Length: 179
Image (cartoon, rainbow, N blue to C red; front, side, top):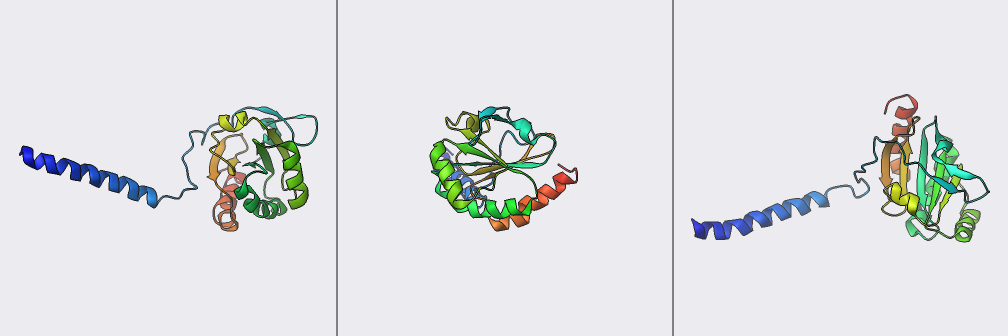
């Protein structure tokens, strides 16, 4: 019996590891469970990228909104930018930006060259607010309901297909009052 266990135990452990890795291979890498889903968006007060007034989460209170975490240094954010421009042109919901760990001049230069899809932009130079929001990196996008509750989080660049097939239906559901 001891001899059997000596060979069976490594096989069982190897099988468990293979199953765990196989599960990971078939999961969507843009879907990461966030402990903030279903909870109020973390409170913050940051300077705006443009202007002198503070930017807080009160900005979107009472409306469904998207908060997009981005930075001019982020290659994926630059790839995502045309999609955000298309989304903003739909006027579905306000799109707010959180400029994350960036230099103000570089962010302003990028927006001047590529267009500005944002209703308003908070400037998080230190990245502290991003940490409070559970940001892994940029880009990340949060869907916020009318009560300021985070309803969904997208990791990675938004695509036209993701907008059409997932984000816009979620927005319509929230606009209609369903979480």
